[in-house]
Length: 222
Image: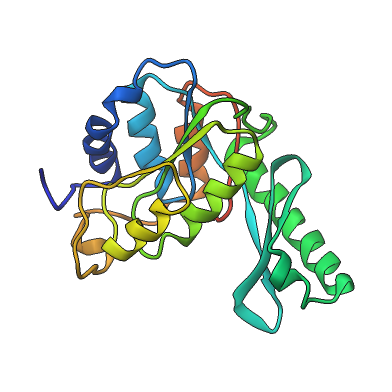
């Protein structure tokens, strides 16, 4: 096992070997939860013969406290509130933030997947894929969204991740698959020889060339 990958596609190919038991199953969907996760997820989906998509969601940030979120918006008008935090945010402010983030979600989802519908996760196993788990916050939010969309089982997978992030994500996901977990996590470039930014064009190209059943993201296609 390597602790370094040539690029995200190589990382996805390596990760797919750890996910081989999900291959060829009709109930499995592979969903990227970030732009950087799309090339990784594409390689995983190809090797597992599974549909590829991206999971669209936007976190609702408290305007006066950027590190605090009071909920998430997702596909099909999905709204999940963190009740304790939301109770401290004026309803009018909530409405304004929800409206703005919903607009952002629609714009970015369109850039990622055009007119294709949101994924049907009802009763399925969702493999949520990213290129790294630094804090795991995006993946954990993705778990909540996937369950709200009806996923029966949620598995988070990444080629590399911080030990603490993997542990925290394990508390939310049914399973976390992360082959490389350095105790002292460093920058992405430590684990990938080549990891440039992933553009909307890259995302559209990768999704367009895959077997698909629809989706998109922002925290998940940001």
